[in-house]
Image (cartoon, rainbow, N blue to C red):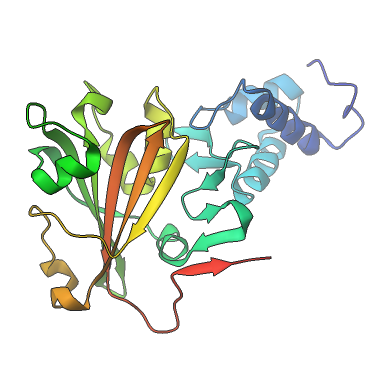
Length: 247
């Protein structure tokens, strides 16, 4: 192993962390990229896998990487981005429903190509000649009840011939999925609250009348291009703020 002189005297697990962080900061590892396996890092740094596991686990706990069982470890946060994850934004802004659902896996209910209605075409900037999108419906369960439903739509012009990974859709937010699998990465997001619902949405799972439901749209952009939109529908909860500002 060729240790960097700047951290060769640090503990081995810190050396491994610094090595990974340097690769991320230099741009060699981008958001969504897979980092070397624990076996590869153990061989490179001449340490046990337990030492590597300790290093990677701390990075995962910090939200910098994400470990996916059976697939590996992936970069989640790139310093200098305007947001580090779907539930943590710059300036200490946190969106409470994202924090709430991040601790629980999504249940995949439906996915496949549909023809977007006029309202959805307008959201995504689609024309009547090319109105097709890939639709993903997921829900978050709390105490055996559906707490929220996410309706995500990716224009076919964006996902093209991509084959969606059903297991990954159960685990990742759409932002993370697109960062990992698509060439065009999100550069910013916009959130609009109390947005109109589209005709394809089935809301009976929430077991509440429509007038009691709260919805918001999360748009993912690459420059001016809309990569995807997710409409989240949920029941408002007492003592659960929508936006939290931390100073």
